Image 1 (cartoon, rainbow, N blue to C red):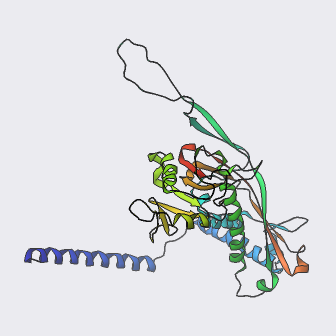
Image 2: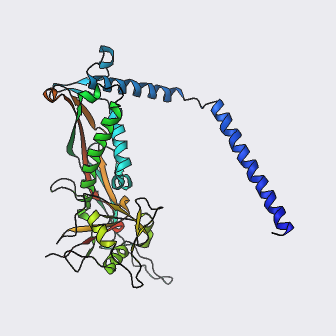
Image 3: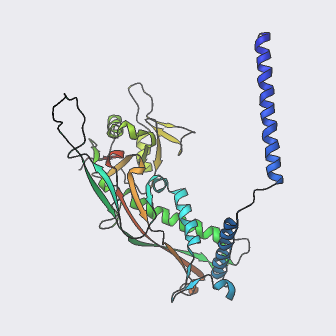
Length: 349
């Protein structure tokens, strides 16, 4: 470097060192004077701790009379406060990206989501002359109705494990229930169930593969192009692991693989520039099956009631030396914005 360049470099290095020193000083001051919680935050934390202790004590069978007051007892067991269920729902959001990215409604009862329908008619604009009547055109508003279908998940916790003081009962219950509910919720988001949640059944942008058990690069491009550019920013691919394995072998005209390993991708792979998520709930490449979903998952509306509850059944599974934990919730799913999502359907046999 020239003398001038060396001087500029030294100045920049001094500024960086100064910034680093300032950051360290602020962190030290922050550690010396921790931020105080508001009275409301402290009260909420205190209530949560009481409820969590009551939950763990009841699971272990040593709940005191005072802590038992935090539980609601029924003929079958105890209903645990919503704070525990909320932690389980948070776990579901963490491990279920489809649900995480969807348009979520955490309310009870039936709801109607309005959307603008341009399929039959739409608002248009055109040049016009003075004193000439404009020809009007307009779209129409429709709505998607979400109700609530009751679903439950049961997990058994070993009493032997719970009696081990090193076993984090609360964390394990949240983990077990979170995984069970996430698997169910993801299935209802992607596949749905007849006469219950629709899932992706409402997707209208459909590309049909030319074969019943194989996919081509051109078909993948066609699926991606179904979604307008304005919605491409948050799009992802969703498929079964076996489908991903088949796509990994596809190459473009120059011999480059379409699906690439990418350490910066959310799930380790990208396809045509978008992240690839594998779900065991997705159907495989079989005749007539929906093998791939592509799009912005905010186009899917999911309603999970905030009145979800969790019950502890201590007596029912006593002969198994276990405690049952049951989570109840209401759920419904439907495609709300058909422009945001497309899918690849395999050719019928």
